[in-house]
Amino acid sequence: MIIFIYGDDTLRVKERASEMRQKFADKFDPAGMNVDEFVVKDGLDAERGAVIGAAQASPFLAEKRMVIIRNLVSSLKKAESKPWLEGFSKVPSSTILIFADSVTPAALEKSEIFKVLHDQPDVHTYSLPQLEGGELTSWSAARAKFHGVNISSSVLASLLARTGNDSWRIDAELQKLGAYAAHEPVTPAMVTALVRVESDEDIFAFMDALASGQAVKTLQKLSEERAAGADAFQLFGMLARQIRLLLQARAILDLNPKAQKQDLADGLSIHPFVAQKLLTEVRSWSAEKLESLHGLAFKLDKSMKTGLDPDISVDRLVTSFLKVS
Image (cartoon, rainbow, N blue to C red; front, side, top):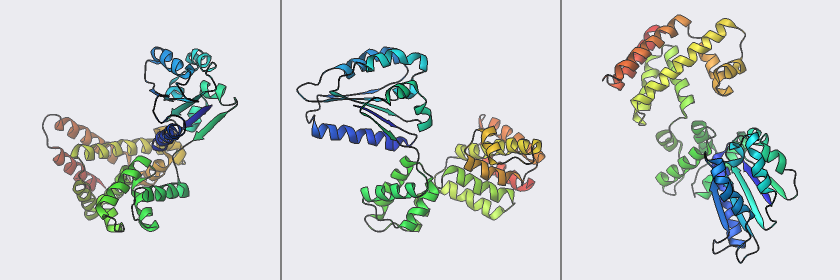
C-alpha cells in the first residue's frame, strides 16, 4: 500500500501522518518494532539506501510494517527520481509506504514520484490544502472541541478574522484562550485582549489610518501594537516593508492605471488578498510622498545600526507619515 499525504496546511499533514502511525501501532505493531520514519533533507543520495532498505524490509514478527517518508517527493527533481522509483518498485505488499509532504497540492502532483506511483493499485491520496470559508470554520470548531474550549460561533468568527487560515496559529490561540477562560465561555473581550491581529490585516489598518491623516487612530493602533508586545524592530520592519510595497504598487499603477489586484499579486509576488488591500491603499499616495518616506526609512534603518533607539525610529517614521499624508 502507498499513501500520499500532502498540502500546504502543514499542521493537518503532520497530524494525518501521525494518526495513521498510531492506528498502525494499535492494529499491527503495539511493540513499535515495525515502523520507520525518515525526514529527508539535503543529502538525498546519501539517505536513499537507508530509506529504500527500510521500505523493502520484511516485517519482524508481524503482518505489516510501515515506513513514513517526509518531504522526499517535493524535494526530488525529475532527474533524481529514477533510482528512487526503482527501489520503490521492489517494496513488498507487507509494507505500508507513506509519503508526507508539506507543499501545495498542485506542486506535489507535478512531481515525478507522484505521477509514476499514484495510478498503481492500492494507492491512496490525501490532499490537504489550507482551508478557507466554511471548511476553515468547521475545522476550527472541531479543534476547539478537541481542546475543550467553550467558544461560540460568533466569537470563533472573531478569532478567525484575527488569525487568518494559519492552522498552527488557530490551534495555539484556541489553547491559549481555553487556558485563560478556565472552562468558562471565551468572550469577545478575551479575543481582543489576547489574540493579536494577523500582521497583514493589522498593518493595513495602521496604514489606512496613516494615509488618511487620522492621528488619533494611528497612535491608538501603534499603542495597541506595543501593548501586545510587538518588538520595535518588527514594527519598523512592517512599516518599511509597507512603504516598499506601496512604492512598487504606485509604479505599476503609474505604468498601467487599469491594473487590477492580480497584476499586483503577480508583479509583487504577494497573495491576491494582500494585493486587493494594497490596490485600495495606494490610491491615497503619490510617488513623491512614498519616495520621501522610503528615503527616511533608509536613513533611520542605518541610524538604528549605529545606536538610535528603534522606538524613536518608529515614532519618527509614523510622525513623518502623518505630516506628508
